[in-house]
Image (cartoon, rainbow, N blue to C red; front, side, top):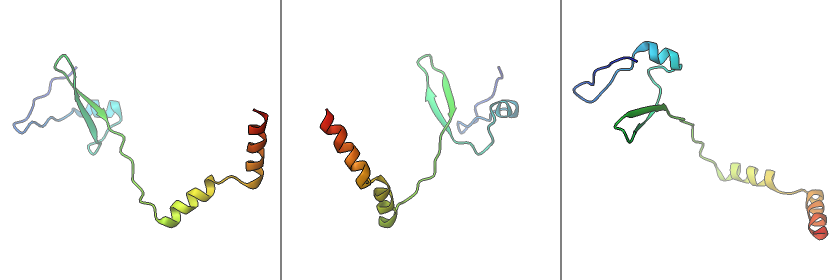
Length: 82
């Protein structure tokens, strides 16, 4: 366990040894939570890129989801059995 000092603006610096042990770098986004006992919990945040889809790209997705005539027939046969 290490002791760190809270800066005047509420900032903390995480010691390099801890960052290295956790595989984090200085640009890592963190989630901050408080615990019932007054603790502060930091966790790496999962940040994922967002893709904006064009109408054409959405149509590609929909086309990929459509059943072939053979698949539709097989599905119907399964429904008929039930």
